[in-house]
View (cartoon, rainbow, N blue to C red):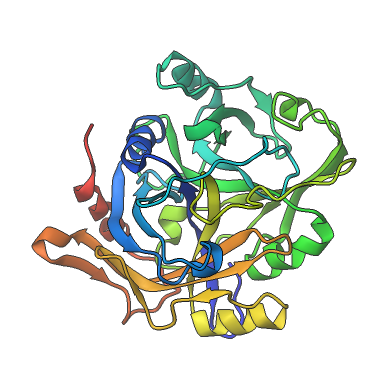
Amino acid sequence: MSLVDEWGVSGIQQVGIGVADVEGVFRWCRKTLGMDIPVFRDEGRATLMTRYTGDVQQERRAVLAVNLVGGGGLEIWQFTRRTPREPSFTPRLGDLGVFMVRIKTNNAAATRRWMADKADGTAPGPLHDGPGGEKHFFFTGPAGLHFEAVESADWFGRRRHPTGGVCGCMIGVSDIGRALPLYSDILGYRRVISDAEGLFDDLRALPGGDRKLRRMVLACAEGGGAFSRLLGPSRIELVQSIDRTPRRIYEGRYWGDLGFIHLCFDAWGMDGLKRACEARGMPFTVDSADAFDMGEAAGRFAYIEDPDGTLIEFVQPYRIGILPALGWYLDLRNRDPGRPLPNLLLKAMALKRIRS
């Protein structure tokens, strides 16, 4: 958590993922990642994102899926009047943007065996010791996107599934030193778990894993925030290519095209956060100002760019639907935003679980 001028960033709320079949990917998230709680489902125009969608208000469908055992979610996002584009090249380690999403598990070896027995196209790689000391392995998701299962001892709810939610990302940057002020000062990832340069055995099977890289793993201090107990701690791994010029994963494409489109943090005190970002040369490029409304959820959101153009989103929730059909909403506007919600209220979201 970072606190300046009464603002805070409390954890990874979700990673946006652009897809061609939102319901098919949501089904994969439920069965493979245990993300069976739709925090919201929404259809409409992305009216504020035209800066990143060709100056056109693109129509879209979105589902925010979470796993109540703990961790962040995935915001599954699909154009409804445009065919999403895939990259014109194969993104490699060190290319600029969100390359991989970390998913927590309590037993990497057992989870790897479970995934290997599934028939949904998930292809787990070898088991390795990661730079932070945890057992981990990589696996593929929809459209061949890269995920990493990492052992974790931090859980919110009773484990019903081999995996939990999002607990970090691997992000390609052109210069780790230039990227650090954002990831440490604003996002709160101040503790360096590891910092090494060279060739890495655990990365060799990934695109670009045969080239020299610098990789730095950063951890954030646990802090407050309404959803902090659910979201839990997370780590960011910055990867810099040493012997080649990286490409932007989203070069020539729109936000919403296939891939990981943004990294989103739960936040509060958005005016103070806006001032803090501006003071560090990273102004809000998108700001919903008063509020956004996605039916079952509402609040304020904003975007900044890291030094290489990777999109970082901040969301301050004002309202979350528990049972919207019965008019049961959780109103967050008149409470201390830095105080965690009671576990019972968070676990009430299980009433929205899709059982399939």
